[in-house]
Length: 636
Image: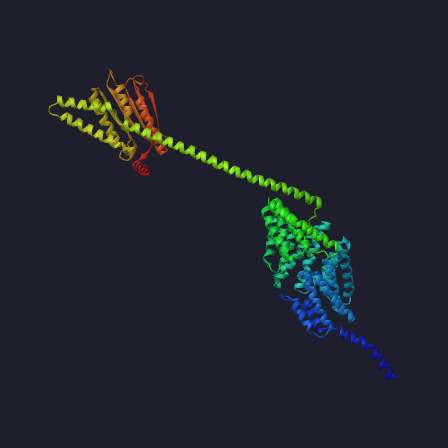
C-alpha cells in the first residue's frame, strides 16, 4: 500500500518538476540579473544582437526564444517596428508551445506593450501593460515594474486618462529612486522627468515642472558618475524643456548644443533630428529666420536618414515655414511639393490601417504642430507663386537700378573730370597772368632810363654802380620767383628794399619805409608766397604818393599769431580815392586763389582807409616754414 501511494505521488509531481525545468534558462537569469539588479560603477554597452547569438547556441527552447526577444527589442529601438512585431510573434509562439509563463513571457508582454505604444495603438498597449503588471506581482523586478508603470502612464495620457496616468506616475517614482545605479536607472529617471513635464503641461502645476528638472539633473549626474556619455543627450534635451517654457531661449540653446555635442551623425540620427527641430523652433521665437532655416534644413536631412514618414512630414512642415519667413520662396515652393507628396503617402498608410510612428516618451508636446488643411496649403501655394513673381520683378528692378546707378556714376565722373579740367585750366591761366605780372614792365623800362641818365650825369659812375647792383639783385629775385612759389621772409624784405629804393630814385619822391618784425619770428625759416606784397606797395608809391605835399611813409609789419602770419602795410598817402588798386587786386586775387587751391589753405586780405589818412592793407597767411615749403614743392 505504501509503495502504491509513493508511486501515485511521483506521477503527480513529475510533470510539475519537468515543466519548471524546461521553462528555466540559466543564461536568461544571469542576463536579467546583470541588466536589472547589478549596480555598475562604469557603463558598458549591452549589445543586444551580440548577446542574442549566445542564447541561440543553447539547445534550450526558452534560451532560444530569448535570443528572438533580444532581436525584437533591438528592432524596436531601431524603429523597425514591422520586423519587431514578427519577432515578438515568433517568441510568443515558441513560449506557448512549451506552456511557459517565465520571465521570458513577462518581457514578451512588456515588449508587445512597447510596440503598440510606439505605433499609436494605445488601448492595446494599456491592455498588455496591465497584463504585465499582474505577472510582475509574482516577480521581484523593480526595473521592469518601473518601466511598465511609466509606459502605462504615457499610454493613458495619450487617451486623456490623466487621473490614471498620474496614479501610475506616483507609483513609479519611488521604484525608480531605489533602482541600482546603471543605464536602466538613468533612462528611468529621464522617463520620469518626461512624464512630470507632460503632467505640468496638463495641470500647469509648477511643482511638477521642478520635479521634471530635478529628475533630469539627477539622471545627468548619474550618467556622469557611471561614465555613460549617451545619457547626456536625452538629459540635456529634458533640461531644455523648462528653459523653453520659461522663454529663456539662450540657455535652452546652450542645453541643445550640449546634447548635440554627445551625438554622432551616423548613430544618433533620430536624436539629431529632434535637437535641430527644437533649435529651429527657438530661432523662430527669436525671429532669427536665417538660423532657423539652417537648423530646419539639418532636421530634414536627419529625418530622411531616419526614414519615419511622420517625422519626415514634420521636418518638411518646419522647413516650409522657415523658408517662407527667411524669404527663400523658391525653396519653400519645392518643400511644399515634397510635403504634399508626403501627406498623400501618410494618408495612404492610414487608409491601409498601417501603424503610425510616434516619438519616444521625451517628445516635446509643446511643439506639436497642427496639420494644415488642404485649402490652407493651397492658399500657401498660391501665395508662394505670387511671392516668386514678386521676387522675379524685384530682381528685374534691381538690375535696372544697377544700370541706372552705373550710368549716373559715369555722368558724375564725367562732370567731376570736366570740373577738374576747368580748374586746372583756370590755374594755368592764373599762373600765366602771374608770370606776366611779376614786375611792371614800365618800372623796368623807366628804371633802366633812370640808370642811363645817372650814367650821363655822374662821370665817376659811383652812384650808378650802387643802383645797378640793387637793380641786378631785384631782377634776379624776380626771375627766381618764377620757379619758386615761396620765399623766406629775409629775402622778401631784401627784395622789397631794393624795389622801394629804386622807385624812390626813379620818381624823385620823398618817402621813407621801415619794417616791423616780431622778435620771435625766424626770418630765415618763415616763408611767404612770392610777389604777394609788391603789388600793394607799387600802387601806394605810384598813385598814393603822387603829388603828395608831405613826405610819404610806408610801414610793413610782420606778426605771428599762433599758426598764422599777419602782415600789415600802412601808408600816409592820399587814401583809397586816389589809388587805383585794380592791378594789385587782380594779382593778389590770383595769387591767393593758387595758394588756397594748391595748398588747401584759407589765406585772405583786407584793404581799408586809415582814420589818420592813407591806406591800410592786412594780409592773413598760414604760417609756412622752409621745410613745409620744400615739401610742397617736392609734391608738386
